[in-house]
Length: 333
Image (cartoon, rainbow, N blue to C red):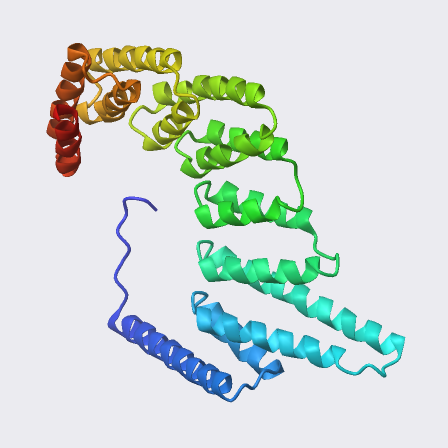
């Protein structure tokens, strides 16, 4: 239970745990040594698949063994395809075996992802397997999309899974469906940087031949991101996305509209006694960037507001004071 200290094990229990861990480490080292030896001698076989399964179940980030495992699978596939004199029935059986091995590999990677969902090398292996299946038109892309959905329900900000999902959606799901999916994730958690980033990738693709529609979509996105500001003003995710949005159409009208919104939010936060000063960081910094976007630093009022904000930022966010000082120097020049 939370708040309750776990009782320390007896001396015998601690000793048993230590012995078990030492055995596990010893076994892992032996498997790794065997793998390196078989790689050197280029032995790619069923035994290679077996011991790499044991090894990678312990450490899914051992990329050299994933590389070796792929070579084992490829060698097994090639051997099945080398004899041109085989009967059609034999070829069909060997193709079935290849598909079986690939589906087993999908199951294997999924089991490891349950324990280690942020392993780059496991996702990389799964991408390779799906490509092999896709080459024979047998990849279930909808299943891969469902897997991504389940993984992102468990951890909405798992950027490894988001990257994999971008790969999967090349083969299934429309851009509009993906945009809707990101909307759902953002509504669940405004702090989902990966979902905001995904929208910055999708929108230019959706409106690549429709500039007018694109600019209208940017206006709608500015309204969406404003909701995030008011809900979680201290979270950087939406603010970064907002900066990208403004850069898509940095007209004087849009910049002045966004400045007005930021000043309104800043005033509201400053009047709330329960709000800590550090929460003011992002609206203040955004005001600085918006004024710089206007490219009118000869305006004395603008320069004074920028300098005032930067001095306040140095005070409330001293960790980044050198960055703010550099911005101030640029304004003063």
